[in-house]
Length: 314
Image (tube, rainbow, N blue to C red):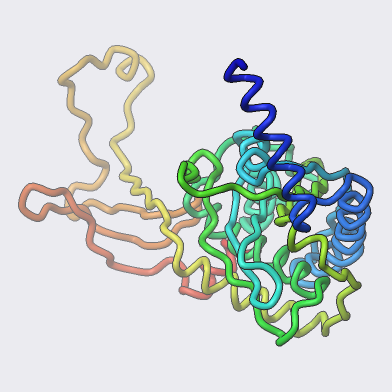
């Protein structure tokens, strides 16, 4: 028997064993449970995001896939952020996915752009600060999941830090994979349409009772989101930029500049430096040097700490 035929027999035997032990369901059952999850998300996730950000989003169930968990994750493509999660008394392992476009569009909104002016971003892996924002997005996705399943004890989901799919560790060859179901939905914000994926082991899914979550106090939820986002932004790494004004030159002089030419600073005394982050001015500084490093010394604040956070969040 060829190696390919042996692999096919082993796959069939594994699937049959999984069905007999309750770890793999038939297509109709898995599809029905996945659709129930999709219904809960389409009804409640937009309301949560609306109450906590003021943004209008729509969520729609698009289908489900059945297969080995690692294969389902690999099939998500390259522009997706993932989170490994667990929920006590329900599942020791599940995976949440979100298309990078939604997080990028949400970040633009938090930086002041209006949803209708945000063009659909070109898909790419998320930056460090965007992954920080994704923490809050996955928290909302996980909370809808927690509210919809029959997990006793009222425990909160545990989520690992988000990561781009390209940075996901490779599966350990010695560890057996398990059959899972990938519940796939679209989430739309303005012109941006991305995917949300919830990947659940079928052994867990087949014994899950799905129900609609209870409504919460919108104003309290909004305050909690703002407070959490403020803390997340405070912990984020931000790239600073320093601008120094140079003496004005004619276009003719500029066009003739060559390697080695020197352009003097505008200031003749202490050189004024304007430091900004995300196009927002932060400090007025003076240019200097410490040992082998060029430095800037803060002389005045342009904005208060709270004003900066509001700029990053509004």
